[in-house]
Amino acid sequence: MKKLFLVLIMGAMVFSFAACQKTIENPVIRMSTTTSVNDSGLMGYLLPEFEKATGYKLEITSAGTGAAIEKGVKGDADILLVHSKSQEEKFIGEGFDEVRVPFMYNYFVIVGPASDPAGVKNSKTAAEAFKLIFDSGSPFITRGDKSGTNTKELGLWEAAGVNPEGQPWYENIGSGMGAALTAANEKQAYTLSDKATYLAHENDLEILLETADDMMNTYSMIAISPKRFADTNAVGAQAFIDWVKSDAARKLIAEYGVKEYGQALFYNLDK
Amino acid sequence: MEFIRTALNLLFGANPELRQIIGVTLRMSMFSTLISALLGIPIGVWVGGNEFKLKGWVTRLMNTLMGIPPVVGGLVVYLLLSRSGPLGSLKLLYTVTAMVIAQVILITPIIASMTANVVSIRANSIRETCHGLGIGNHQRMRLMLAEFRVPFISIVLAGFGRAIAEVGAIQMVGGNIQFKTRVMTTAIMMQSNMGHFELAVALGVVLLLISFAINSFVYRLQKGWQRV
Image (cartoon, rainbow over all chains, first blue to last red; front, side, top):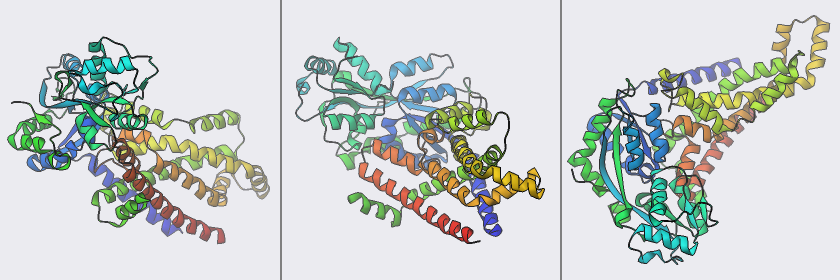
């Protein structure tokens, strides 16, 4: 019996050393990104290519844009990859000489039941569509998590000149995009989604409005400045930014999703 | 029953990523349980086996700590290990070690409290016997560790079950990083967030099968001990 215990402990120690070694492996870039970038599979697709091309190791954590930026504030990321201009500008406005590097975009989409009870299909703009949803009191799921999509959604209500807060048909689930799509699917409700997550998610909802001028969704990178945290991996962050801007990476981004969904999920911004 | 076929395919098919995830899951759960048991059982034996002034308070405190919501435990560990937190210089955030730390905080009170409960039932008679035989306090503790080894195994298993099923805290401090801190539960959460419910349930079945295998192994061990 004693022998078995000894073996167990030794096994445990070997495991722990293995665990320790992994954590000191360098050079590691810690990226904080949004669920839309990660859950759509884009990062999983780019990561091996980036690591192969540069020799860096990329560690990705994902959360809504609000939480993703907060990791930058706390020093738990070397680079942010997010999509909320107002929140990004607030972050770089904190005075550490950081630069926002917009590099790709797609469109937000208004998704909902195929029957489209509010009739948003014929809208010219998202604001108009939101007004129709408000006037008809059709069920709407809001993320309510300060993510980039949530920020955009609140801005659209404002542009529509209405306030859905407190309406019985306006449900705040306080979760990520995937959970919001699942809830919208269950309740046959409308919701605002980024296109990539919607296409990667399995549901019966339909895209009712996209490519309107007020639906553009721009993704940016921000390298955390050494002025903010002296030991941040600024060199690695810059290496990622440089790689993403390279022709090889732009080609990868432009091709992503074409095979699986018959259309690109992200478009490169002009250099 | 599509997900059962998916689960079997996952389990027996060549899927290096899944194997890696299972490896991290087992490493994290076993370590968390081992450390929690090494801390919790002695505490529990001491609290359960002795009479002292603040025993009622200590017992109530342990029982309360059993109910820490995992997310709160995770958040506390996150704030401690964050680079701008007090232990930030250790660079432990988003590592398996961080996940183990969070788990130990959640599981140790459970093991300690259950141990104290088991021990206290027979503590008095053991104390009296020891007193009669002239056995000292130190040796009495060792005697009790041996005496209660069978229920202790069940308690450790309960701790292990908790560790392998945990999701909220380890998502927060581990970050669900692919090939590093992604475990079964966070992978299941991620898949269900993507609406891949079949795959998520299949992963859940795989997780249960692993748990079953471990429990079967320990069960045989326990049976062997009972015969001794």
